[in-house]
Image 1 (cartoon, rainbow, N blue to C red):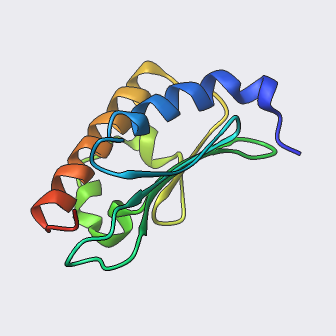
Image 2 (image 1 turned 90 degrees about the horizontal axis):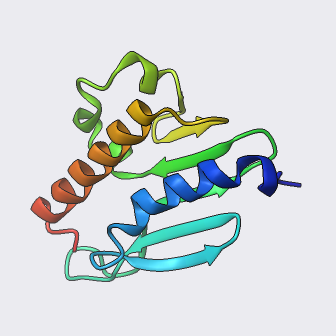
Amino acid sequence: MPDNEKFGAVFDQLKRVMQAFETDLAVQANEPDHYYLNFSPSDKVPKATFFGAVQIKKNYVSFHLMPVYMYPDLLDGISDALKKRMQGKSCFNFTALSAENLNELAALTEKSVARCRQEQLF
C-alpha cells in the first residue's frame, strides 16, 4: 500500500509539473496517489497514448515521462543528480525532492512537450 502521508508533498510537487501541460494533453487519471496524462488522439496518433504520470508507490514517488523513451536525445545534458533518479529509460523515482531536481525535471518535461509538438503528436 502506498504511503500517501510520507510522500504526499513529493507527489504534489511532481503533479504540478505535469499539470502545467493539461491544456496540451488529456487527463486520464487524477487520484490522490496517481496522476496520468495521455496524448489526445490526432491524425498522427489515432488513439490516446501515454505521455506521463506521477504515482505514489510503496517506497518512492515515480515520475514517468514517455517522450524521453521515444526521443532519448532529450536526456542529453541532464545532471548526474537527476540521472541517479532514473529507473529504466523513462522513469524517475524520488523519496525527497530537491529544488534543483524539481526545476530540471520541469524543464525536461517542457522540452518533451515541445518536442512532441514539433513531431506533431498533438
